[in-house]
Amino acid sequence: MTPLDTTGAAPGGTPAPATGGTAQEEDLTLQVTRRPRPGRWLAVIAAVLFAGWLTYTIIVNPNLHWDIVAKYQFDGVILDGLWVTVQLTLISMAVGITIGVLIAVMQLSDSPVLRLTAGAYTWFFRGTPLLVQLIFWFNLALIFPEISIGVPFDGPKLISWQSNQLITGFVAALLGLSINEGAYMAEIVRAGIQSVDPGQREAGASIGMSNRRILSRIILPQAMRVIIPPFGNQFISMLKTTSLVSVIAGADLMTVSQHLYLANFEVVAMLMVASLWYLVLTTIASVAQHAVERRYSPRATPPLRHRVLANLTPGRAKKETAS
Amino acid sequence: MNDVILRARGVRKRFGDTEVLKGIDLEVRTGEVLCVIGPSGSGKSTLLRCFNHLEQIDAGRVWMDGELVGYEEHGPAGRTLRERHARDIRRQRERIGMVFQRFHLFPHRTALQNVMEGPVTVRKRPRAQAEKHARELLDQVGLADRADHYPRQLSGGQQQRVAIARALAMEPTLMLFDEPTSALDPELVGEVLGVMRDLARSGMTMVVVTHEMGFAREVADRVLFMDQGAAVEAGPPDELFTAPRHDRTRAFLSTVL
Image 1 (cartoon, helix red, strand yellow):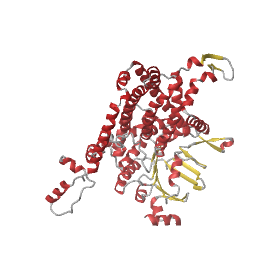
Image 2 (cartoon, rainbow over the protein chains, first blue to last red):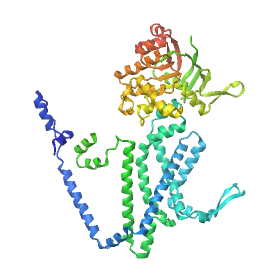
Image 3 (cartoon, chains in turn yellow, brown):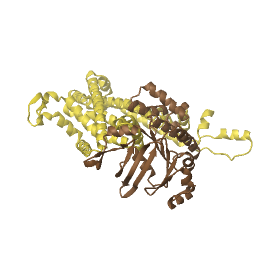
């Protein structure tokens, strides 16, 4: 331990009684040190041993067919599915947050019509299973065989499409995921907007800003601090929720894994391949979430590196954050 | 005597069952500094917020430069009022600067960006021109060297001075101050009052809700005493502070002076 470390660690140090004389006082400050934590090191050793044993049993387990996992991990079919999963997640999250902001603003509006419409939206799309919604969108042709633009109530039609041609697996997946996500994002955005001091709105109004400007320039940027952690949660959740689209031939990572194991009977190995990719995606998303969180509240969240260190050596992490 | 810039007649306001303004009449002349004093809950702040339509009123009228604030006359003989179009309300607010008790600076913007926000987004001023003006205003409130600081890096007194600069950036003809020093540590009150004193001397029309009797006595042209939602009496500070006509004024002044 370096001398620098010892000065940063205050809690648990034994303060000596103050005595006269400057020289002695300087000595005393240098004596403050951190209380040793032998229990924590024992816990580290135990955890490392357990993790090691777990990893070992998994690696040597012959039933997991690691050689087959390795063979398929970067298989072209798997990578195509991975790309579909990434696309589904990004697009439906983007559409979802757009819908979410819209619905949240409607919920907070003065107009009872807008409030009721927004309420009905969240009520319905949060109230029915996503799986059902996905199947519904995919089978839209059963209810509306034809989709057209024209005069409502059986008036003349300008353009018409066959629903079966328009609603592919991918389109149905996007519709289902985005519309459902919008309902959840609406609640998150609403909580974020409501977390901003009402005085901010008044301050904006007092300099003549319009409600829309106040929202986009004053309220939403401040609401981001509250919105981002649950948004990150939703994003990571969405990465895996996309696997539901395997029921409607969504061609995502989960769908292609299933297709593979239906052909080669390597169920566990193919699921391992998919799971490893989901883990990679969620890890990237977690790191990105952390970076964005820091961007919007640079003081509230210490760098991840320091938080990890802080679990072992609080004194040291505190020093680095302070600098 | 100058023109009347702000006029209120019979302004009433209730929150639920409590009537917080019981018919207020008031006139403010161009260049005048009016200080509004009175006990907590007397309706001072609510009255101030009616002047730029941050509060809706239940009865009465407020005119700014002869134009009804927040409402327009409607129906036969203009007997009823209805709220103006949002665009009109914004235009009216542009001319009325407001300084809040708790500053309400935009925390995600630097001091300079706070001051520039109105001119750039509302007035559509070119950025360079708005920045030049904003820096002049920050200099005027003694914070030229704090332009790039975020509100959280500033003391309460500094934040309030930035808030004053932000209101001034819209070049208002009337400034409203809602207890501008009540949220400040005692040692920071002076710097804010100093800026307000300079502003008053420069001829700005100001309505100041305050508990700072020393400031009211020194800077105000007139002082209005409010109690329980009513305007009890108004007069030059020398008269009101030394020879109040009403018992309620006397009782209040004896507790604060």
